[in-house]
Image (cartoon, rainbow, N blue to C red):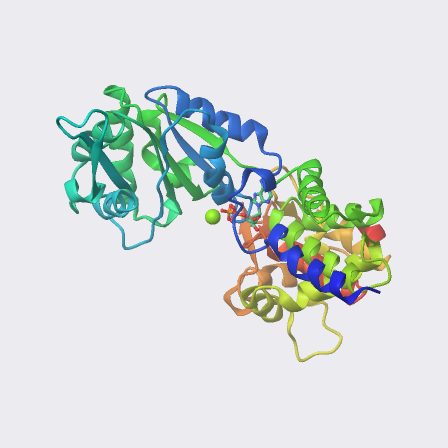
Length: 402
Ligand SMILES: Nc1ncnc2c1ncn2[C@@H]1O[C@H](COP(=O)(O)OP(=O)(O)O)[C@@H](O)[C@H]1O
Ligand SMILES: [Mg+2]
């Protein structure tokens, strides 16, 4: 086998499979047409702004990063900023304006078409702590010769009182028909959760929920990477990655990366096989974020060798879920039966489910509803595929059960 080729593939794989970095190139951005068109429509409509929300890890930052690459209009100004819990309305806008470098061109008298350029930062005319009206005026100035799209990521981290001021701003920008689009991006199940004041600006704020990716979209991520690397992948290998990813693009990248690297060192470096995916699972488990590995350990550790924590958690990970990602104890019972072939009653594992929601087991699950009608889900969505991969690796689960 050609060692040079193997080394090149191993290195190049990391350019196209990026489990820990958002996508910022249109060529590598898979699917999401409906949501993307929703954002683009709002950009083209004066007075419309966007709130983009969904679970952690579904691709919100990526989508917001490629918006400008799908627009033909020029010039576009597309600064972005991450909000945090210490930010105020004013500090967020100061940060955003600091991202903008303004070049002003002035004709030089008597020299035909020649111009002088002076550089200033937009933050030069915007100071901390200012009000929505000041932001409006600054954006009006900016939008005279370009199209500003202002992206505020991790909006969920802001204090509720600060979020409300953004609703006022959206209303003001909309009333004045300012040719700029504010895009609020954050983790939330509903817009209510992200910005309680949204009702007062209903018409000006387009709500776009980013659900988990469809199987076709996840498949496209793998296909993009594999074809950029000029490789092929077996159908079964592709199917496995799609199933394991559970709609979360992070795992499509993580498994894609390690499967290609496994192929690169094997007998058929140009073909990703299902055995490479099995190898990728092992590497993905070992290379998963430390926080995920710790959380799994805290949830399932026990001094008793005959404990069932792992089995029950695996059953949770493959339980049938509703469209919001919740499962009930009865769904866990069904999947335990699939896993063990035995019929356990709910009381046999109710204690495990309760403990998974407790501090002691790191609150790996969240519980909603009332007793007897409880519904559960993984608090961190990335835990679910990790648990499934762990189950496969320790032979609690097999591919057929998925
Ligand atoms: N449309 C997409 N096509 C390809 N990969 C994507 C896409 N959306 C997200 N990803 C990948 O998924 C992972 C999580 O994406 P990210 O945008 O950071 O999610 P979020 O901001 O919702 O937490 C990253 O590795 C990113 O590269
Ligand atoms: Mg993000």
